[in-house]
Length: 132
Image 1: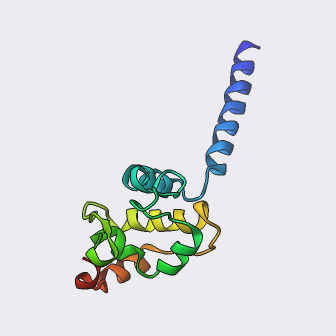
Image 2 (image 1 turned 180 degrees about the vertical axis):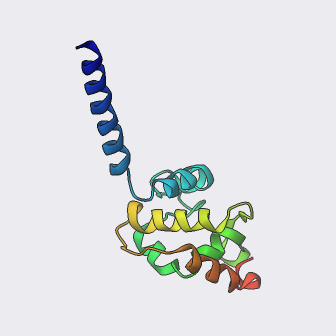
């Protein structure tokens, strides 16, 4: 009797655990990477810091969507616009894909999902001289 009860509760716990894991946000890895690599400057919610780090609102993301892989990887250093962002050469294409998908879907409802192939293609076409 005691073993059946343990088995029953173990099964119930496993179902709850898997249900929680399956209901976790689709782009959770992107959020984790964003929080570590981007959140200190752009803030956890993308609000940025006025005149220091730009806000990553839905409009800005939608406007920059094609340039985001290059911006994230190579940074920005445009003295005329006072925009500066350090490069992130340690981020792999999968990391950049996860961050962009998080920004486009979980942070903002832009309903745009990118594959790693899309991001690698964009990275191969980055105009390095116009970004830095």
